[in-house]
Image (cartoon, rainbow, N blue to C red; front, side):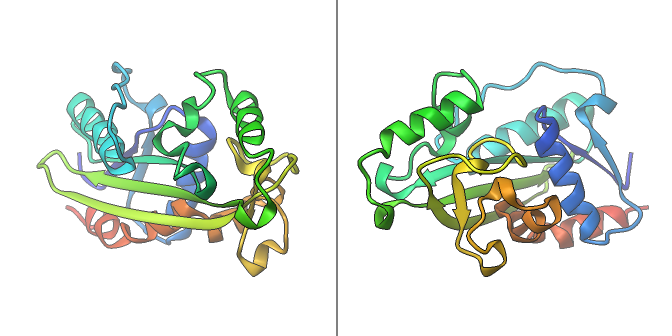
Length: 206
């Protein structure tokens, strides 16, 4: 099956975000599928030590199960004062209790950290892997800081606590940005932009 890519994610909001970013790249002739469009398969164990390793694990599992070129993302929050944590453990930082518990734990860990030392970054690594074993990898980083209380109802994960450094954000959290604003600034947009040549080539496959 050519001219098709599978976005390998069980996170509906992340899948939608990735889909919007791919559409915004203006790539024509590429059919985008989600996990709901293919037969289910066992979710791989994400036991890599880096975002790159986990993204590759997910991409390989998707290709093996479906035979389709697959795009997988692994992302998370790195906090300077926590020596880069939660990092690859971002989604499971509170032991798998969900976004609210993760945010509560992060706030507790930074309770005594002054604003000047609350620097952080969202990191995304996107991997496009073909059934022939060819891969393209893009990494993106979105710098900002962690505030002391949640703001905003958009986004997911740590978005309500993250204020980007970008002028466009104007002091708003990622959860206060519109989807379009977030797409234009985000770590996933930066990572995916590095895959545009590979996605264009895939779209042009006869």
